Amino acid sequence: MPVLADNKKAYYNYQILEEFEAGLVLSGPEVKAAKLGHINLKGSFVSISPEGAVIKNMHISPYLKAKIAQINYEPAKTRQLLLNKQEIDHLIGKNQEKGLTIVPLSVYTTRRLVKVKIALVKGKKEFDKRQTIKQRDTNREIARKLKNRF
Image 1 (spheres, rainbow, N blue to C red):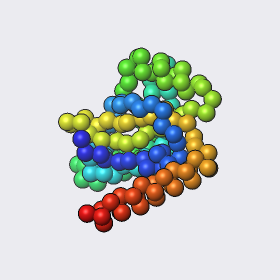
Image 2 (cartoon, rainbow, N blue to C red):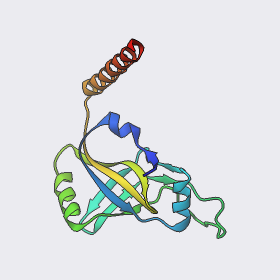
Image 3 (cartoon, rainbow, N blue to C red):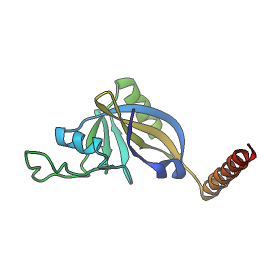
C-alpha cells in the first residue's frame, strides 16, 4: 500500500475523530500522474451531498507523457469519491454538527486502485497545537536517550 500523497497539515491543524476509506474517480492520465506522485492535498476538502461525496482543490499535475494532449486540463477540478450509502448518510449527519469538517488525509494505492483516506475532524485551538509540539519534542528526547543508552 504505497502512499502517494500525505496531508501532514491535517494532523497538526485538526483533531481526527473518525477515518474512512473512499475510492477516487480519475481518468487514465490522472491515475498515471498520481502514481508518479504528482499529487498535492494542501488546501483540499470533502463536500458531502445526498447524491455523493466530492473532493475539491486536490491538485493533480498533468501527465506529460500522455499521447493524447490534455487540452483544457484543470489540475484542481472537483473529483468524485466512492462511498457506500450508509457512510454518506453518516457523514451528512456528522457534517451538520458545528465545528466538524471532512478532510483528506492521504492518497494511496491498493492493488491497482487509487484510494483516499478521509477523516471527520475538529479544528484544534492554538494551545492544543502547542501541546502537540511539546509532546512530539518530549517523545523525540526520550527516544534519543533510549537509543544512546544501549
